[in-house]
Image (tube, rainbow, N blue to C red; front, side):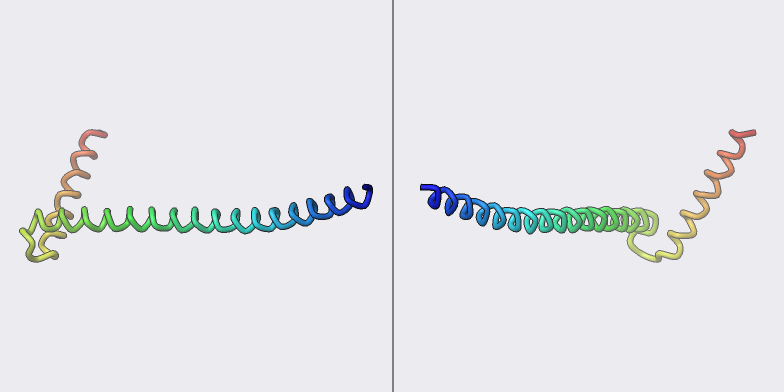
Length: 89
């Protein structure tokens, strides 16, 4: 009887160690998945920003010359800066 209890305890310990290793593996996999998901979210934000920039550029040029659109945007930014400066004074 005592020997049976000892064997059962050994099996439980072995099973516990096995589950512990599996738990650690799953935690590492979860951490890697979270990191990958965060990297993909950042990439999505960057791509959405690029899309918005392209849409703005096309709105100014009608899909044509990007240098002219950049110049228009720069002029608008300068005008906004002047307005802010006037408001501050």
